[in-house]
Structures are given as C-alpha cells and as structure tokens.
Image (cartoon, rainbow over all chains, first blue to last red; front, side, top):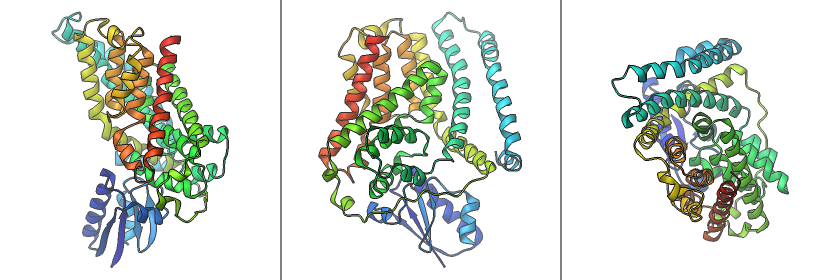
Length: 77
Length: 344
C-alpha cells in the first residue's frame, strides 16, 4: 500500500489534486492511504515552495499546480 | 486539446510556427468578422443597445485571443524559471539591485497566490533577505499574464508596458523600504525558528516539447478558469459603454477630484476580483471620463493587495509587519495614481 500525502492549505487546486489521485488509484486498483497535510509548518517541513505538493512514501514527487494524470499513474505504478 | 498536445510533443518548433500563424490570421479576421456580425443584427448601431453590442462582440474574441496568446507565451517562459532556481538566484543578495532582480523574477516565475506562504518561507529560510522576498511577493501577483493580456487587448501596448514598469517600480521601492525598516523580528516565531535551508537551483533541463506542453497546460488551466470573468467583465463594460453618459465619471473619478485616488485605493484593497473581471470595467470607466492615474491605482490595489492574501500572510507575519506591508504598497500605488494624473 502506498502512502500518499497532498500538501496544501485547502485551495481549489489542492482539492482537485486529491480528487484526481483518488480517481487514478481507483481506476488502477491500487490501494493507497491518502492524507491531506494542511498545516503550514508541516508543509514547509517538506521543503515545498509551491502548493499543492504531493508526497509518495515520504518522497516529494510534485510541487505546484494540479499534477497530470500520467504523472499520478507513474507514482502509483 | 490532447491531440494537439501530443502532436506538439513530436515537433515543437513546427507547432509553435503553425500556432503563431493561425493566431495572427485569427487576429486579422477579428475586426471584419465582428463588424459584419454587428451590421447583420437588427439594431441601429447608434442606439444604446447597438453600441453596447458592438463593444461586446468585438472585445470578447479579441480579449480571449490575446489572453490565449499571452498565457501560452508566459507558460513557456515560466518553464525556465522554477521557484527553486529563483530562490537560488536571490539568496544572499543585498541592495536595491537585489530588489529589482526579485521584482523581475516575480513576473516570470510561476506563482499562485495560494502558495504565497510556502514560497515566502522557502525564500526566507534560504537566506533571501526579507525586503527582497517582499519585492518578489508584491510583483508576482500584480504583474501577471492575465492583467498584461487584458491591458494589451483593451488599452494597447503603451499602457500595458506602463503598467508593467509601474508594477515593478512599486514592488522594488516597497520591498526596499521594508528591507530598510529591519522588520525580521516581526516574523512569526515558528518561522524564525525554522532551520536554515540551502538554496539549490534545480539544473535539470527540459526539452522544448515539454515546455510547449507546459504552455498549453497554462492555456487550459488559466484561460479555462478566467473566461467567465472576462465575459462578465466585458458585458458590464459594454453596458457602461452603451448606457452611461459621456463624462459621467469625470466628476467622480476625474483628474480634478483630488480625493479620487485614495478613494480608489481604499475601495480597491478589500475587493478581491481577478484582473480578468476588473479590467474591462475599468476600461469602460476610462472612456467615460475617469482619469488614467485613478484607474491604474484602482486596478493595482484590487490586484496587488487583497484581504484574503493578507489573511494568509498573517500566519507568518506579525500584525505590525502586515500593517507595514499593506501601508507601504498602498502608498506606492497612491503615488503612481497621483503622478499619472499630474503628468498625463
């Protein structure tokens, strides 16, 4: 099971990112534990300068803007 | 759109040339087509409704076309400037040249106001001085591609360039002033206690095809988000053009009314409209006798200073620094408004 975190203070793009990751995981049949990280000190601790950021298994894979579907699928593979 | 995107990946240069030619052709066709459409309508052109319709039918495609073009080019340019690289360029800079660099980088680095805070912290943590960080943070939202595209479409390149230059000037001077005031201790404690981070500029290079893809993605995302505001703004602007009498705004927002500039800024700050909705309305006001400086000041305060942004920044700045930030930027905008009303 993949541990996926979406970093962001709750803007529209962050919600879209969460939705897109959930859809991609469901479509691929991959089980994920998805958490939203919304408090600033924790977001900053990942060293991300643009939100939404995505962390997969402890590693920052994306920062800034809603990620593309192909990118999400490559993280879940 | 995906078909276009995948084709562009194979031959990015061809795509850019073909897209540019198609864009120019569409732009050239704009006036004759919109005039033909208005002429075919069963309304007299001199009537209120006629002149409102003509404004709407001509300006909507023109603005959307310019918006698409400018957003694509900016998306392409943005792909050369990541926040990480900008931060590495700015770390440890001092003096007004650092402010100028930060303001200019604010124009070309991709920025979304929702990540203003992580970016602010990332900069400060890596040793970018506070004043220089502010220059970036003021320029980035104020001089954005949507505002520039709309100014270009509705006011022409001279005003667009003027807005760019003045936006940069306000950002440079405000950031420099905040830097001189040495307000580092007015950052929230948790920010000051963060461990120092190293600024490393990302050096990976991106093939042109991917940059074109980034430009197209920007068009999809930005134009897809703002077009309803553009149309609503132009519709209101059209109504003003058609129905509000000439010189109606002269008394209210004209050059003689000295209080109009501060009033415009005071009204503008709490307003949170995006550039897309506000600029067509502002253009119509200008045509009805409002003074350019007043109008520019209004526009800048709506776009650069907004309550939601101040609320977000409150998480990292203590009240006094927030007040100084808003005060310094508002003063800069006021000066711009007065200077313009005096000179033009």
